[in-house]
Length: 248
Image 1 (cartoon, one colour):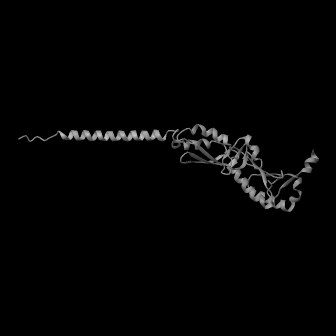
Image 2 (image 1 turned 180 degrees about the vertical axis):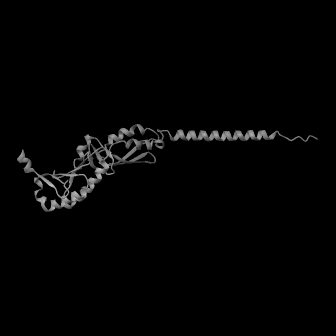
Image 3 (image 1 turned 60 degrees about the horizontal axis):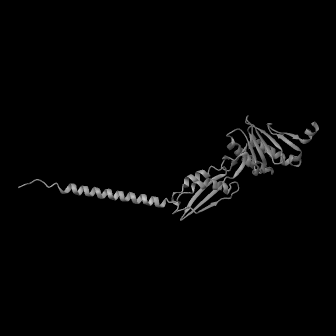
């Protein structure tokens, strides 16, 4: 009696199982490839509508079109949203960008422009403390205060300007320019063109002293003043226009 085990059926079963698995995987890959090719077809799923929401105060539709046109030739499902946002953020006046797709063929773009709070040397300073803009753009923003100082000092100069603005409200005055000189001394110009030489610290104490003197003595004569030197420990020196005219 032959007691040898039967080893004929097992290899056939394993080979069949492997072929079935390979066929399944191949079919799955082909289905995925077909689906990919289908949804990536820009003719089947074109982008037909682009809606841009912005104030367009400093940014033009032409600038946006120039950036987006090369990036919108893809299928609706494969639009390079991140790349679009990155390119739009390179525009000087753009603060924030948000892009949203809406089925079946619409892209909505929200663009928030930067809000300038002051001039800084030959650029602009935003409410978030960012420098932007070029000298050719400054003419539109002439109502903003002018801040000057050494490079990378814009945050400090802005903070000092804001503090001085609050102090000057006590005597109903408003600054138009603030300069920090390389030696650390400060010079403040008022909207009436009066120049205040503040020197170095303590700036707050000197400016408050000026406000008290302005309300009680100088307000009625403000149009006759050219500049005031506040660098004295307990007083100030006033330069009158008449003195300049007499010496002229």
